[in-house]
Figure 1: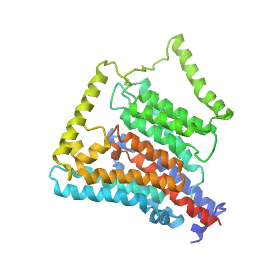
Figure 2: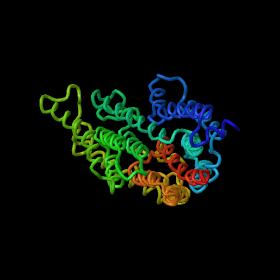
Figure 3: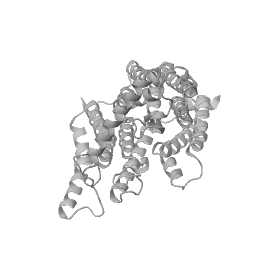
Figure 4: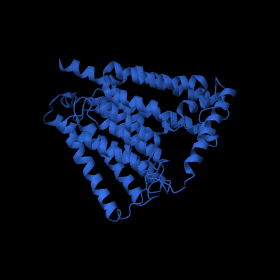
Length: 405
């Protein structure tokens, strides 16, 4: 009990300070490794024998224990019903749908279950007694590592990405890399401040670098939305100076090298079709596949509009996924499935608005936007962890203000 009180105090000393440092080290090591998807990459390439799920279970279990015993993890979880119940409803309907549909996928049920575990953990994690700015620092480090891996892929195509012609880093998929970069940047920004600090500018420049290298439509559009929302009312002289130092200097350096003879080893070409590939017909073929997938999805929905075809059908049985979460939920789980997903999205927006969390509203908005471009968002555990942490932090804020009185 004494340890818990010491760790929870605003300015802990002695044992409390030691406990807080220990929590920071544990959270930092685990989160950076987890957020950048290094565990999945190492396991997928045979460089690690332990399954990512096992590593997460052990790490999350230890951190959840400390959050419950030393922090306010359970309080945050109990007060997070508005954003927890829709996720549970989506999972329960997915399980019921699996039981009544012979074409459902057991692996997809496992994926939904793991997403729910990540969601619960992200809410409990908020209760850990960590330093105020530590979380943003952890996410910024993850963004920096992600940028570095994308640069490696641009210099030596196919080193990390599953596509030899496009940079993706540890994410292995350019679309996932673009999404992770903008989500990292959103979580790393200081939303409470009315100007753009040096680290904020650094995060935005890193994110822009990732989006330029990955060249995904959703990523570039998400970055544009983030810049418009975040920079509105924050562009002042110090902010401009930070961007000049962090953005223009590297750009001028690379541009000068390119004029003088190119950047050695950098195999990068900006394409109007937003793809790092020499196949001029790639964009047309991609668009045709997406249109065909949407038409196929609409046909499947019209045949089974209420119960759908079974959890995981859009991934396991369709030649090309619908590239749209709303269509994928409807194809898989019918009308209740897509309504549960929309319930979760709107609950996140409402919760963030009512608690005054600009970060939470931005992350929920990005998820809503990217749901029009991808059907794989349930596989992006990093997104759910950061979004859940933002929701949990917004829930915890009133508790902290009440405790400070």
